[in-house]
Image 1 (cartoon, rainbow, N blue to C red):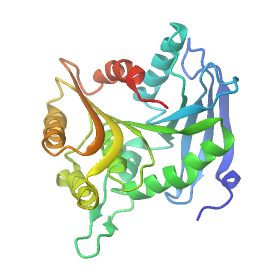
Image 2 (cartoon, one colour):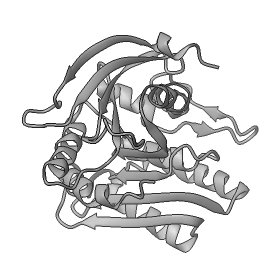
Image 3 (cartoon, rainbow, N blue to C red):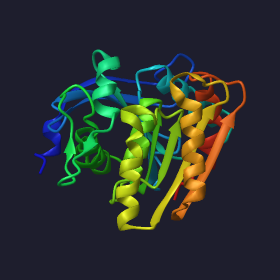
Image 4 (tube, helix red, strand yellow):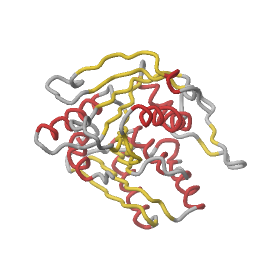
Length: 275
């Protein structure tokens, strides 16, 4: 069990009118400490333009908030808002503090499943600790947002590359923590494609998966098996469909690992089933 949520907030870094030059939506940044990961995270909280109204809002959680993909996302939702087509949701971004190359491998890469007892195993504290990060989301970040902001039960998870792998890891959990899953160019090849082990474990207990999955990839992503991995997952989910899973696959011709990110955001954000 976690301690009082307030104990995890120890620094408010900045509150400004947008994180990038020219944005109008308000983004507040805080530092949130996790007792599960034993580390702190840079949290970006962007309020919708109509937040002061009496309504409550869905929440869209996204990874890599302080990297290029996070900046692109905030710029795009700001542009939607300026054009009169706002994404009426609270956006919560999670950023790493420090060497994000190693920290992303720690938090987004899947552990192994112990075949004898089903426990999750990783012998390296700096690699394959996605379960601890999942507990941070479930037990610390989400409760903090739900306590302090006007939000409803609709939650979306967005991740790019290793973050996209995390999206699938969360989707194959027995508990339905999120309803929308957006995986951009996911690194499904990691750990000998053991994400399929988690899929098989989930399928063994249930044929239903009440969720919306948006899998996006660039047509020019030939390195690290990104494109082939996305196509393989697409074929797998079409050959063995889950009851209740709404699945969309979008392949953007000629786009690369990074260039497909804004294209995917522009395509997918208006399509999200936010309730």
